[in-house]
Length: 109
Length: 117
Image (cartoon, rainbow over all chains, first blue to last red; front, side, top):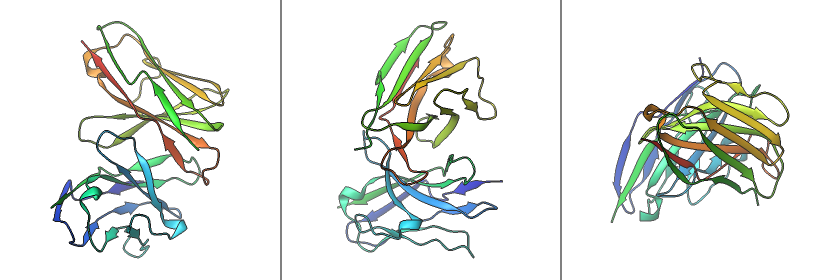
């Protein structure tokens, strides 16, 4: 079965601390994974996707097929990073996104 | 580019009435549109996938007669919640695929808050 798991509902860190939001997936095919972010009162927007291997707003995520993980990392958290983060998997044959439960990141001053 | 709008942003209706929500891709042609439902502090649950000119594909457990989807053009899809009841109260979000986005990238609308009294 296709599934995305984000084990933490809430992650609270202080400004400047490193951040890692965990994401594990279950998918029999070749996965295409995304991180989406939803800031307060704003729409969901794409943060990054594994195939582009880019760093957006200081965030990076590496696909680890052995551990079936796609954790999101940032070395130094900023207050403006506070938001809801969703890991998502797209099924190759349908283009449908399967979302994880989401993790609220709270960066305290 | 790649902006998706939804209308209305919020709607309150009486039980038993029908409500229509519009989803528009403003600056690109959307080959596929998706409708999601989001409960408070929960994830997005895909309700249906809609391709222009063809019938929507509903996810398991979603009543197609309850949630009517029409995708009449490459820039407009509508979701009609028929005979709404309080348990239909939720946040409905659409997304659109196409335009300048890479394959499989979805652009999300701002959502519609439906409250059924």
